[in-house]
Amino acid sequence: MLLDFLISPAYAQATTAAKTPGMLEAFWPLIVMVPLFYFLLIRPQMKRQKEAKQMTESLSKGDEVVLAGGIAGRIITIGEVYLTVDLADNVLVKVEKSAITKVLPKGTLKQL
Image (cartoon, rainbow, N blue to C red; front, top):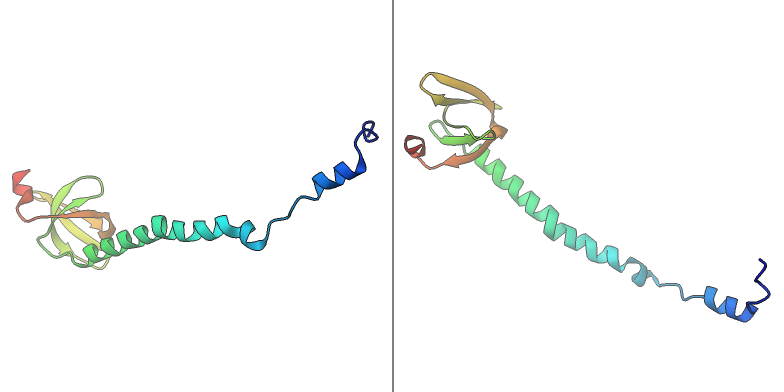
C-alpha cells in the first residue's frame, strides 16, 4: 500500500494480465496420464488376475501346489471355495483356493 505510488499503473496491469491457458494446454497432463496409467498399472493387474483365476479353476486332485505361506503340498479334495492339501503323511490342511500361489510340476515334492 505504501509503495503503490512507486509502481506505475501500466506496469502493474501488464504483469497481471498474463495469458490464460487454453483447454488443451490446461488438460494435456491429464490426457497423457490416463492412457499411461491404463497401460502401466491397470492392464497388467487385470492380466495377473485373469491368470490367477485360470490357475485356480484348473486345479485338480493330485496337483502339487505352493500355498501363500510358502508351504508345499498335494491336493487331496477340491470343494467350491476350500480344498484339502496333504502336507505330509496324515497331515491334512483345509485352505481357500485363493491361498494357492503356484502349481508345481509333478514329482517336485519328492525332490524337496
